Amino acid sequence: MSFADRLAIACRAKGLSNHALSKRVQVSSTAAWHWARGDTHPRPEKLQEIAFELGVDPDWLRNGEEGSGQTNAPQADEPALAVESILADAKSKAAAVMRVREERLRLELRLVL
Image (cartoon, rainbow, N blue to C red; front, side):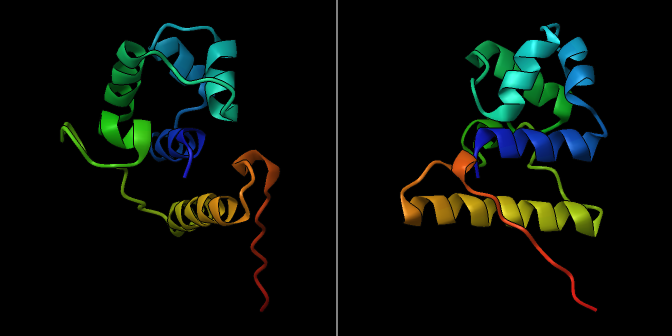
């Protein structure tokens, strides 16, 4: 799962848009947009600020691993967030196996009733 995926999951869990996050951490909405797309990553000190605002562990946000233990990765209260997290992880693993960038993959889930 990429930084952009983890950022999206944490923002959704907090109910924040990229624009709202950018205001809270005092960066341009363009910077937040680039983070959300996976084009760039925030500087370490800004990442700490983002993690605090989102209520997540900075190490989880940075690299997907629990570390310093400020707070944990967001727990999915809604099934949609749980599915999104599973798909993001599957996308990351598929990209590694296929040796392509995650941005080049699109996974779709179809519910058949």
